[in-house]
Structures are given as C-alpha cells and as structure tokens.
Image (cartoon, rainbow, N blue to C red):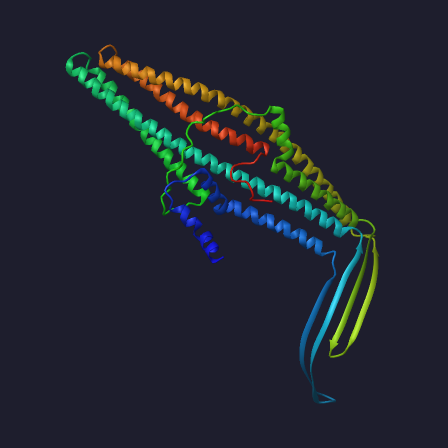
Length: 428
C-alpha cells in the first residue's frame, strides 16, 4: 500500500521529467491539474451532498446531550444568603416529522434534479477543457510545423541568392536579380520570426491548460503525423443533430434545471395554500431526575393574510419556470447551429486535406523544375521566386489542413456529446 501511495505521489514528477509529451498525457494533466475542472468537480460533489441532506429530512433526529451545571446565586435585602447547586444533566431527545404537505418530497426531487444538472454541468466543463487542451496541443504542433516551413523557406531563399550571385558573376543574369533575391530572403526571415513567436504563444497556452511548471521546459510533443486514412463524417447530418440534441451535457443540464424549477413552483404553491404536518417529539432525562416527555402534534395552516407574499412567490416561480423553458429553447437552437457548422467543417476539412496534398506535390515538383532551370540558365530569379512562393503556400496550406482536420473531428464529437479522448471514467 505504501508503494502504491508513493507511486501516485511521484506520478506528476515522472510526467514533468519525461522526454516527450503525448496527447493522452497532456489530457491526463489537464484533468488532474486544471483549476476549472477541479472547481466543477467540487460543485458536483456539493450537489450530491445536497441530495443526502434532502433525504435526511425524512428520518428522525436523535440527539443525546450532556450538560454540567455549577450555579451560585447571592441574595440581599430582606433575606441575605447564598444559594448554590451543582449537578450533571444527561438526556436524549428525538424528533420526527412523520407527514407533511409534500415540501420534503419537493425538496428531495429538486435536489436530485439539481444533482443531475450539476453532473451534466461538470461533464460539459470537463469536455470543454479537454477539447481546449486537444486544440492547444494541435495548435502547438501546427505552429512548430509552420516554423519548419519558415525555416525551409529561409534556406531556399539563401540558396536562391547564392545561385543568383553566381549567375551575375558569370554574366548570365542582370545584377538587379540580386536585389530581388535579397528581398525574398529578408521577407522569409520576417516570416520565420513570426512563426517562432506563434510557437511561443501556443506553448504558453498549452502550459496553462495542463498546469505545466513554469520552471520546467515543455518536452517535445508527439506528432501523430498526417492522418493515415482520413474520412468524411461517418454519420449523416440528421443523425448528428438527433444525437446532439439528445445527449449534449449542456442541454441535459438545462433540462434538469428546468425540472428542478418545476418542483420549486410546487413548493411555492403548497406554501400559498393549505399545508399540514404531523410530528413526534420525545425527550428522556436520566440525570439529575429520571423523567420522560412525549408529544404528538398535528398542525394545519393556511396563509389567510400575508400581504401577498405567498402569491407573489408563486408568480415568481412560474416566471422562472417559463424563463428556464425559453432559455432551453434558445440553447437547442444554438446547439443545432453548432452541430451543423461542425459537421460541415469536418466534411470540408476532409476535402481540403485531399486537395492540399495534391497541391503540395505539384508545388514541390514545380519548385524543383524552376531551380534546375535557373541553374541551367533557362529561368530567371523571378521564376524561382514565384515557384518558391507557391511552394510555401502549398506547405502552409497542407499543415493547416492536417491539423484543422484533426480538430474538426474532435469538435464534432464535442458538439454532439460523443466521448472525447481523456473523458472516460472521470464522472460516473
């Protein structure tokens, strides 16, 4: 057992000292270290505790008591003296609300619905954090790949400048071509600096989400590479919409909150009408005297006049119930829009990835041909520059298409309520 606890305590340190960071490990760190997730789980535990409190109202309350009394009184006037008594008091009391007009049942039902709403809210929060972590993980990989593209652009620009200078020295190219090649190299270096800054910003965002220590370098991320077998959405749009409206945690939360509000309305209506209770109280004293008290009380009440308080309370509850229904209706509309958008994005990302692959192969072949032609004196620096711009554009588009496809797949799962990586087993 001690070994198990030691391994659990050392687990974060082992992650922080590893040589690489997988997406699975990043998601585990987000689950364990992200403060938003921790707060959502605490709210979920509070809601579950409220159910236990509501259930306890149906049971008797038994309270043993012990009291020690040491009392002294001094008298003056017609009679002067001192009175003192000292004794132990031991007793046990019990009280039980046997029957009521339904308030306890309403409170328990409301607590259960609130608990279900809190569970759905916690799930939604966890899912949002996990999706954000996945997106930031891919964004950092994206930024690193784009930096590689920028580095390669600088290298090609340097090679082009060297080749242009040789041709000018040989008299096979005008001297003005050097200015064009130098401008291309300067622009490439500007793009390289911007790409480095994007890597720094993306790394900072991922660090914050997974709670990575600021004094420890972030290890290299494990790149999944291009999708081995990219696919369009595997379900129809109608199926995606149906699943999303049924199982999205935020919509489940809104429905449960509305149901909880309905029990609040029932409770307010009971307070505004005839109410009744049947209770039993019992007290047994053992010291200093052996006595016993028991009472059975049946109480019927009706708010004959309260200046309209009960009536307004009912009206407020009705308005809150109507507001919850309208809010749910609007959330369903927004969910429908999100599902349609995410579905279309995945489908278009799939098509875009295929087109980007074709464009990249063509741009590489075009740049190779332009470079060879310049070396042979059959192409100008402008031809090479044009081919290089096309290649950089194709490389950038391909990197963007790869990671946009990965994110699009996860986003559709997010908006239709399907499981996300790292979500399994966290909330039951």
